[in-house]
Image (tube, rainbow, N blue to C red; front, side, top):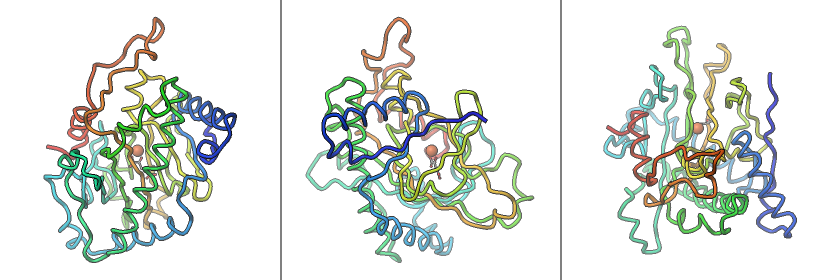
Length: 320
Ligand SMILES: O=C(O)CCC(=O)C(=O)O
Ligand SMILES: [Fe+2]
């Protein structure tokens, strides 16, 4: 099996470090995003207590009866807010849907920004007020961490440090709480049914809480699957297709999946919480001129983030 370097980086080095530490952080994250598309991040601003509380609330949500959760499934929202039931999302190129259900929370604009009109309101879980408040707090904290990671990436790309700031302020980010549900009879599953089929994320970067659980794997350049492991409460952070597009493939949106556990463990749940950091929909994803040269001809047509998101949601069956 090939070995893959997924460095563990301390966000505090970038946020509060001296010049040398900040430069080191930018270089390290840029290099890892160029090579494997994945890093793990410590000192990201979410303490263990908040993460434990989040998982407690997420478990309580999915433990609610299916009929009750279905009350919060709104097909007109294309899964972007509230509940998406089992069997709804299918990775591109797969026949069987992923073995998961999820709940998504979007942006809450409170500063009068006109972008508010573009976003549907979040659905609140009447039965679990603490789920609503915890996820909102986690959303804000991950937005903060993501903004600082993008600053470090902008420096690596020789852009102004604040290049992404106004593009992600009040952006269309999504916090997804995920439940890979127990399967009592794995032998009855369709052949290609997995927890999450091989895919690339759509957004700029993804910050994932809970990747200490087994199952997440990335596809190496040698076309081998390699397990991604995070230490303790570290976040796993990876490049999505929007950032890959913007950088004309300089930063890699690496294919990943969540495999099924051994048969005897299929009857246990797996939970995870990715935060998909999206810009506002008017962000121009045209390849940066600095990422195009003789050896790296332009690979993508010009598109805005909003147009691109629409196209991708149709592909995975969430938007009709
Ligand atoms: O559950 C995980 O560990 C990863 C989930 C994921 O890749 C996704 O939802 O895009
Ligand atoms: Fe993903």
